Image (cartoon, rainbow, N blue to C red; front, side, top):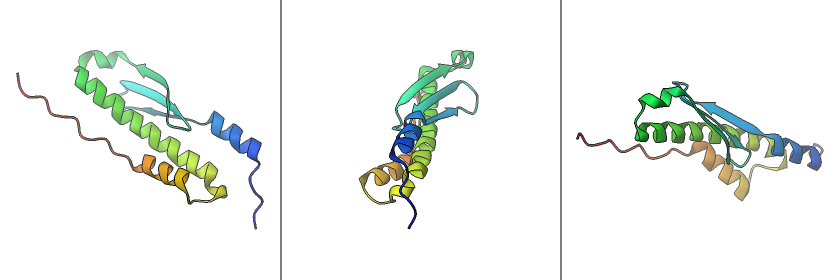
Length: 108
């Protein structure tokens, strides 16, 4: 049987974990921590040519991408402790979450 991971080292890795994602057009870049909490948001001048709903959709989709990466990496760190249970179920859910499509604006 493999040795259990060092608790302090695991906690330090989880605390330091950060996942960053950037939108395909480079307009939005953001980071989340191991819990998927937003820790940094940067918007470039590219957002000036976007509508508010386009900006919101780009931020949301980029956030989901970072959340997925965070969940994947957190799951890999915790895997030696077992892959069952509520926490691992939540990480799998975060890794598969897909936001609802943005509503299409009616022509003015």
